[in-house]
Length: 627
Image (cartoon, rainbow, N blue to C red; front, top):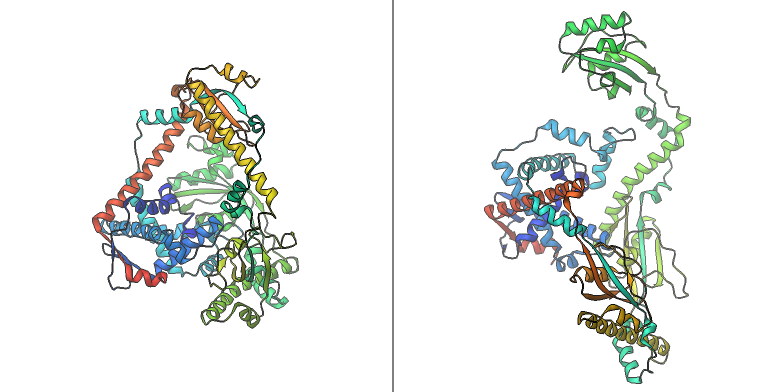
């Protein structure tokens, strides 16, 4: 969850940091560092310790992320089988190794820098694009972390970024490497080709009963009834709860008075802010402006343009300097201030235009405000209900009883296939929930899993009540389908054998024209194809074969559309000249440079892990994961 709040931290290396840490353990491995030590820590790197609770949070977050990516629920046990626990340990070990090094180097990030990063983070900005305390606190509640935890996490992240920036800067990329990669990516090939269609195979014999029986039993998934499942779902979402929350006029009016600044349109001003190193120079400029001289004349010789000193439509809060804000918002339009002292010297302010503020009227925004208040209340209620549901589940209460107890709706779905089809052939009307069907078809009957989080900060719980396994249909019932499958498979096999024969004849020296003449077809010529090209004629597989074949030689591949095959001869290989496109080569060089910087960071993390030593408490890990 903290990763989602770090995503706006500045810096190229900072943006890639999380992925690099995970990659580092993939290089080094952790198979040989498990111990049975009896402490509360899951992981130790030098003097750094990772607690069991922190690992559990990171592990669960990674499982949820993978579940969203794959569209299928992945629980703690499945995650361990897939090595997700190793991946999370690797990432945490990388972070700990870097933290140990930053402590040794005494690297620090001042409070002001941490505050500025948080203040400028879009995740904490309100409707007017500025840091909003209420939004900040709401985000912390939704992510179940404290303000101090966020501050320390951001401080650690920025401190590590200092070290990584120093290591990864100025990684050189040899020109020969750039040119080789450029040549590989931009090589083009022209092919002569002949398309072999399924009808070129001719008539097929009748399949024997033995062949049909073998296909019927060998591919049961193609001839079976679909698996069907019935399940129940309990949904808790802010928008559903908000519909049940009534906000009175009195509550709305009180909130309106507390939040007037969010709804009032503030006064804005445009003005010239002309900086000077000396107060006497500022005083002279003010006199000249009052005397009617133009701004261009006053700026002459200062090295500044009108655009440099123009501030447009700023609110008082937008002005960085308090003394400048006081001057700009106390003058009449056209008036010129006395010299104003700022942290960077003296300045003169001349107001050029004023747009008065417009206070909001309660009646105009009352309904919108009520909806916002209901939504905020619902967001907190979701968390409270989440805790109550989890407490009841921990006590063994069935999902249906929990729904009745809390006055929530439990939705039932009966005898549904993996794609949501009902027994009558219609599609079920399913709620818009992430991985709903994939999760339902992953679980066993009455298997309890963690709730799945929705995109609007809600949750749902699912319980599979019945599972109807697929059953192989009798051969007599699906005989026509089996015959069709046999014919398709046989025709594909014979067409593949024909293509292989023609390729061999071509590579043995027979001309393409002689080969194509047997089928009364002309040899066609392709346009110049790149490595990633694909079309209805050439599949990606066929293009890969083309680029793996020497010039003048034959190969084959599947067509891009349908069941046809393509027999090809490499007619021409066109190798690019890097000097002809210097801009593209320069861009590629920059990409390779960034990749090398990533490699340097990964190498540093590996070296630090080996220097400090990494140990994993296997017993504690088993307890945390629930093994």
